[in-house]
Image (tube, chains in turn red, brown):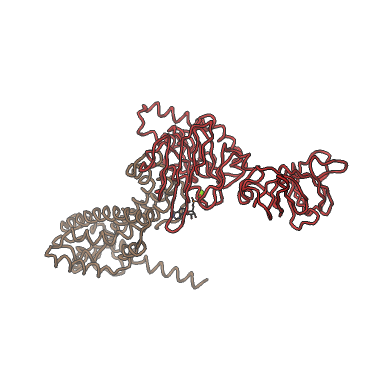
Length: 368
Length: 266
Ligand SMILES: Nc1ncnc2c1ncn2[C@@H]1O[C@H](COP(=O)(O)OP(=O)(O)O)[C@@H](O)[C@H]1O
Ligand SMILES: [Mg+2]
């Protein structure tokens, strides 16, 4: 079953049943995926799940056991990396240390029919695009991490590839630089309109940047969706756990007169809808998941918008703009996490305080 | 701590004192190699200019050393690439056998090569010395080039390939410039090893002796000893110069490539 590109996008890349072994190790276990033109697509998963292998398969650096890679309607079987309309930004950036910045950027233009002047102009334009205009004559080895990253981007984009492949491009940068580059990359992608495929193990980064995210575990795609769908309606407990924070509580499910009823330990009974059960409605024992921001502490005099349950505050983590509370619902042993915005005039509560918690049945996800 | 210091000093004296004696006697007026020194002269150096057999031995040595150095470095590049860039069954064993001449007594290499050459009905000559020297220099070249290739990020080569270069042009535009300091080092070290190698040259040289072999034959004539000292002095100075140049190259290369200096071969 292939994961299709969105209907509004023309499919550009089509991967069919990609299988890859490293010796005994089964690194890619049947990848079926379509990626659309102009899409910002992310491959997200824990270290070792096969993201880089899949990216390198698209680039033409890996010999796969079976399956096909189609790029812009052409079968890439037997087409080596230097003949594919893809370019890669390597995790180490792979800036040529013996060349200047301009020589690095113009590296791939050697065989192009452009004149020498045109090549220099193209390189300068690419540098300008990544915010490094005027850096052309600098020695590449003297650049900072962020600058290397930009040179690597310019070097790949100057060739106007159909697809830009980025392998954990921001993981070597410090937090501030990383957040700045995330925004710049999004802008850059919109500007050039090229399909970007980003590999990352950072779920926040994937959520911030992507049009669509494929979550991978052990060489398989577990779920492929928009960031919002992925966050709100994860298909499995494992995906739910990997993306952001998800609380889990045990529950039992039953049908009652055509209604789907779930009885959650500590919270009580509620009716749920079909789409809250991505794996199908489980009859009997189940687990419900809910995000920290779907729970709210009710202060004196506030009435719940949805349902209410009493709890005890076990742990308080203050973040400045937010406070995270770990609370135990009465009759439940496992604490759940909730997050509150620190509005002006609202006190941060102390450990051991009893509180009324408002929760929303519509925000639950039920897993079998 | 104190004994260690004494030991280190004694060791250095033992190592370098004989070398300092060379110029001492090379500039001494007496033909007898003994203290006390009798006076200063440069006559032994000018005498070198008249010994024509020595000149041909020198040129023979240069020819052999240059050829062996080039061959050993080329084989060294292949060997270093095989050991750092690829993985194949039996790799460790094969690399071990290639590096073996590093510790193999040269006399064994010399005698076995001689036996093979004679059994094949060939005659010895410069070519056989070149073969022997290439054999013993290759492991040194591999050792130097291994570290040069290992320090090279493989994604640099992949990046060049990804940007449209072929395997060959990637090697030319990226790999070669980045390992060039290693190549220059390997050439100079191999050249130096070949220049002063005696045993293999002694067994395998034909009618034209190499410089060390010629020097050895000269030792039978006490009259010529000071000239030998003069020649030795020149060789020592040249060797130091060459090794220094090799090291400067290596450091400059490492700096240009933005690599951290890891000490290198020297
Ligand atoms: N060249 C290789 N030889 C053997 N195993 C490899 C090789 N490359 C990757 N692997 C293995 O394949 C798995 C997936 O690797 P990779 O695609 O790099 O993961 P990711 O990028 O998601 O961290 C890992 O378990 C890794 O050890
Ligand atoms: Mg990876």
